[in-house]
Amino acid sequence: MRLFLVDDHPVVRAGLAALVDGEPDMEVVGEAGDAAAALRGIRGSRPDVVLMDLQLGAGPDGFAVAEEVAALDDPPRVLVLTTYESDADVHRAVAAGATGYLLKACPPEELFAAIRAADRGESSLSPKVAARVLDQARSGRPALTARESEIAALLAEGLGNRQIAQRLFITEATVKTHLVHLFAKLGVDSRTAAVAAAVRQGLIRR
Image 1 (cartoon, rainbow, N blue to C red):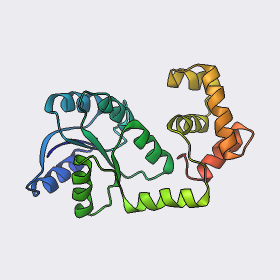
Image 2: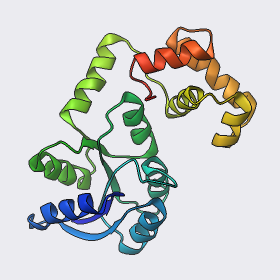
Image 3: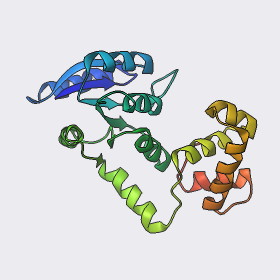
Image 4: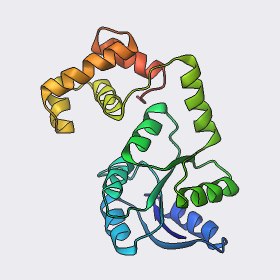
């Protein structure tokens, strides 16, 4: 299977390429360190699986790349490989089109198994991430939508409704609707309380 590596650290990309080189059924057909280069390379090399971090330095992040890749004709599978394990990141990645979500601390065997699963169109989660998802389900904590997670994160930055609308290219009325749903899910009645609850429950990073 053909792999494309996306990570803003050259050493990480080199390490992944060296690992993959030892697998007879895998080959790296390209790599990139930022969103623009990733999208150009993916369109040009037509890989089967894109192995990608979420943080790509300045510019668009891995969530944006995943959404662009999902919109391609006959898109490759996107497998996230990152250090971030918050519920918000997992939900946003899946909503953006990622097939799987792994942590960089995973052993090579787990990585290879996830790559092969992604190539077959199967979902795969790091055991630690899967445990968090199950824990959330069992505890009854609210599952925010990708948009609600984005708005909660922007609330944490101190942005007002107009600024959030401009950042997300939506109307203020839509922002207010999402806030109503967000407050209801978190059981709060203010922006400050919403941020505190989302951070406390691990739904956003701060």
